[in-house]
Length: 166
Ligand SMILES: [Cu+2]
Image (tube, rainbow, N blue to C red; front, side, top):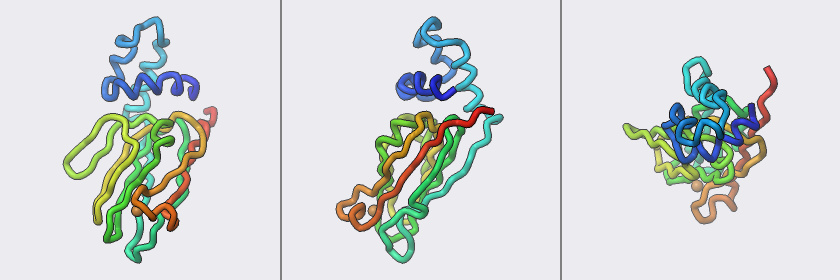
C-alpha cells in the first residue's frame, strides 16, 4: 500500500483534484487499476478524517509550536487545524513534510486552495485547515521562517509512521 502511494505521489502532486481521471491521463498501462480505487477510498467518506490541532505561538507570546511534535500514519486522511493565538504572525514551514504527503486542500476563511503547499503564513487570530494524506514515512522538521523565531524555539518535528497491516 505504501509503495503504491510512493509511486503515485508525484502524479498526484501534478493532478490534484483529478484523482479519478489520473489513471487515464498517465496511461492505463503505467498504473494498475487498483490505484484508482485506492485514491477513491481515501477520498471517500468511508475513510475517517482524523483531526489534529497545532497552535502557532500562544497568548503568552512564547515562540513555539503547541504541540511541537505531531505523529501521522501513512495512508490515513488528516485534517490538520492550524491556528495562531498570538499577537504576531507566524509560519508553518515544513517543506520535506509537504513533499511526503498528498495535499487534498487547504481551507482558510471562505477560500479553499487545492494543490501542493509547503508553507502557510498565519496572521494573528488566523485559522487554516490542511487536509492531506501522509504517504512517505520518516521524520521531518518544522519551523517558523520569521527571522529569529526558529532560533528562539519555534521549531518542531512531524513524523509519519508506516501504515500497519490490517
Ligand atoms: Cu513565528
